[in-house]
Length: 393
Length: 162
Image (tube, rainbow over all chains, first blue to last red; front, side):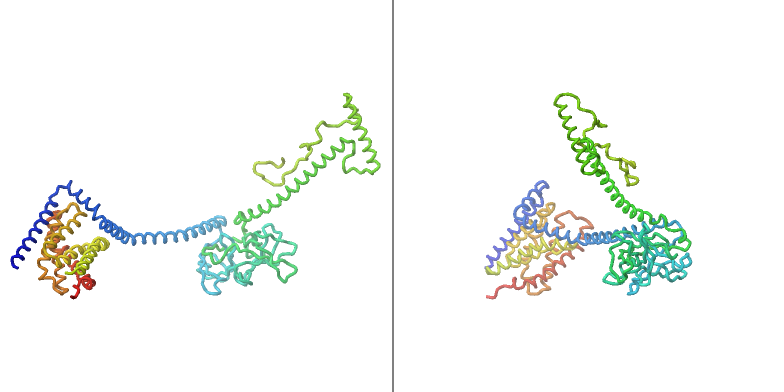
């Protein structure tokens, strides 16, 4: 028993020594031999373990970089949100600066502080008061057009009634002055408070959808030419003597945060050139439509004239009087017979090779089976300032 | 040890080896646990010293193959640790978690000492810092994890009643 144990211990020691010697031999391998041995092990029976370790390392890298990536994404999202709002604000401020440069003088810029109560959709607090020249009934405008009117003034701030207020009214008209009316908030229906009604338009005056409506300047509060909205459609009311139109407002008060308050001294100078571009564009569109109608009419007249000229020429060639001449049927028959005789004479002369009887001579030698261009009277171009062209063609 | 016990021990051994190459790099701690040492110690107490030395040698070669500069250092350290653990199993492998923890701690620390001395890459103060600070920390973590795993895998590791 003791002998067996001693033998086992000796065996264990021999194995231990062998393993240690092998390990030392591995440790003593030169560098150029270590790498092939290690690589061979990694590529063969250790490959699954190496693969596991690589996956774990990648997982750890992903975990470590997840926070950084999330922070990066959060920053990007935040910047994107900021950029969007900054772009909108920039756009609004640019428009406001543009409006200011067109107004030149007599205005006060202010911030519009919206409340969030039920009645606050119709009023707004402005960050400018009487110290900078704001007075009661000063018009409040935005780059897009009419916003409201100041109804209370403090030294440093003021209170404005927006066009959505039930008591708000402004005298309005079409830019060409053909239709006048009173604009007020459209308070009925699901869209109440967000559209404008143009009431009291004379029955003879019709407005097309899309037409711009501006302030008329009547009443002395609002200067002439401030955009109010564009015509959406006519609505039926109980008033049989006047028309009422629904307008899409030029300004949505809920989106207005910077406004201009016009001072009293500015009202007398008018609004010429301030919204001219808008009004001009509208008027130009109207002119184009009218010009298009005129051009079509002129073309039709010219075509009719050309057709008449051809028929006249043919009639003259046959010896008949021009169309439109007043002849009775007997004379017409005699003339037709004479013309037929002359035509037969000409055919006979042509067959015999001599000149035809030239009792009736044509004034010109042009072929009559086509329309002569010079027979069409010159048309006058009714579109003024056509690019690249003159008044006539 | 009967066949069932041997199979369970082999399964446990493989689980520890796999954990060494998955959980350890995933955690990436500065003082990492060493599942290979745990596997070696758990195997060593179940086999005779010669077999434990061979297992240690092979495990050492496996670990060294991923660090070719230290090829052989891990093999020497694990061979000695495996042989020693198997030789001293009567002393340490009692049914006491604290003793097991100490057994794991000592095995890992001895391994680190042999490994870093044999590797000869770290020297001087840095070697002392490694052996007296980071290695004990790593050994403590290894011991804690080993005890936890022993507790969790007790049904797998306990010998089947006859």
